[in-house]
Amino acid sequence: MKHGKKYVEAAKLIDKTQQYEAAEAISLVKKSATAKFDETVEVHIRTGCDGRHADQQIRGAVVLPNGTGKEVKVLVFAKGTKLDEAQAAGADHVGGEELIPKIQNEGWLDFDVVVATPDMMGVVGRLGKVLGPKGLMPNPKAGTVTMDVAKAIADIKAGKIEYRLDKANIIHVPVGKASFTEEQLAQNFQALMDAITKAKPSSVKGQYLKSITLATTMGPGVKVVANKY
Image (tube, rainbow, N blue to C red; front, side, top):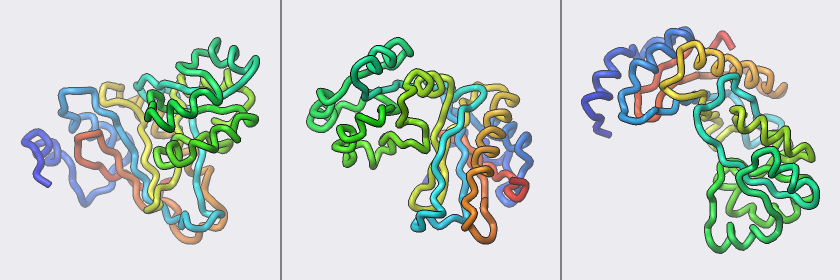
């Protein structure tokens, strides 16, 4: 893959063989964000888990103290008074069964997070093939299947992110934008690492977190000291 001049210049700031302390890694990541738009800062964590085993799955959510810097659109599946509650709490879209054909047949996906009350999961389950591969399926562990829709919406709008293992047992999550201050990014990164450290499955043997890399959307990766976590 051929990289542009800005990427090459940014990459010179970083020693690929070195693991940096979080604060220094964040500083380097900010310096290497050279795109014309406000790049997202992402964390990629390679774990020692084997996601094929149910007892080594990692999935959860954490509210980042400074948010993600992204406007998040929330869709809520509910009925009765919960519909009004969701609307009052600032959901972008609310509804029930009538939304199924819109998503299934018309390919409507104008939302980033889906919240559902438990009594709607039978309906939402029919969208598994569409929402599942996109990581949009509501899940109790992530706090997106709940009767307290107002709290779920408030948390998501405040910067709640979900983390989960992908097929290669890596966790990919955003922790803010390149325009954030180093302090804001450091606080978000720490909140995420605290949550992932707590989420360690007891059945994992050996090293839990094998590598941690910070990077912006278009920038080079910076390795963070992993054995501290």
